[in-house]
Length: 419
Image 1 (cartoon, one colour):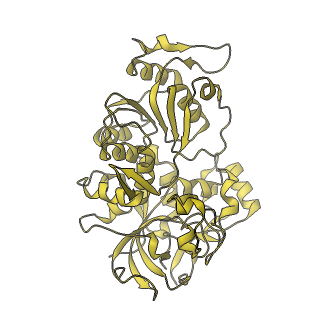
Image 2 (cartoon, rainbow, N blue to C red; image 1 turned 180 degrees about the vertical axis):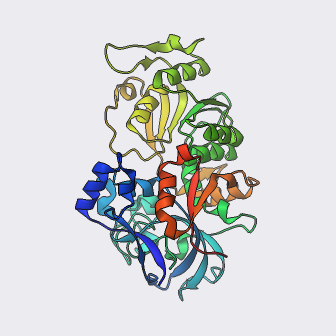
Image 3 (tube, helix red, strand yellow; image 1 turned 30 degrees about the horizontal axis):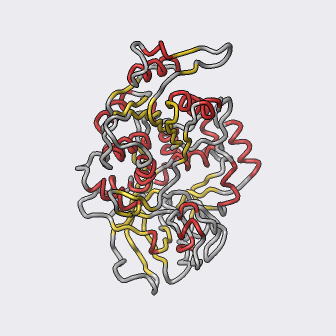
């Protein structure tokens, strides 16, 4: 029987992993974790409008790691149905089509999947207000319809997920054909790249602006690429912790790299480059307690880390009336001083998933933009997929992903099936 990596709900295990995984990371994938490699049959097609996709490659996302380590916010726990098979970043081939699937989706086609389980996917009509406006990642009916609850494929009991040899079932509206020129290594990046595109399009595009990207993991690197691919001309400052991240950031369009350590060193470096003063320390001021405060900053900051420290730094590093975009999944931050948001009148925006975008006067889906940018990139993002594992090696794969920076990894993927 085909195998799959499945997550199941267990409050005692969840609490144990949450409490111990920071000190003993192996707890998150071990015998007492909330995940298991199991023999599982293929999920049934929920309606004639669905197809079955056989996964070729499926990526490991930061949200997957957060769920597995039980360290994220419980915010989403009411909006999933367990047990579920993980994996929402995937490229595969159509293996079966329902009788009501449009004929241009045929068996053997190579596709990527847009995971949002919105009104159309669930067979709900008329659609909720967010879906009717094209914001279907924020669907209000994620617990209703023809399938069980779930915000995305990979977090829903009815659909299966990419980390499965049995395949995943997908509504035909979730499918995008992969251009022939794209390799599987590039195509598997379409979904996370779409998230980066959605965030990058919130930035000022003019050459006079300065952007700061905190974090040069895979999502930070894809954000840099997406911004340049969309025609953005601003200077991009990037904080990269590791040498391989810094080198890749420059290749993808970064202007300058901060590779030092410590918030204060970063503050001075940013202020020098944002024109506040020569020798940026002149713009740094010290309160009686706590971290320094700044006068000045960059026009926009993209927090691609989502930690308490990075969120606090991001707010301090955004100029008055500038924009802070939370790209990394923030969880429940602690010790964050929100005074700068109030005092500097900063616009704080989330950047979750994708939908429809306004680009050059045209309205286009974010996933299609991501595929277009990949097709035009001449393989620029292909080196990001530099760790590949079989499903049976899931513990090693997740260890690689949890330690991506130190190990030199960018994007870890599962090789689920061959062409």
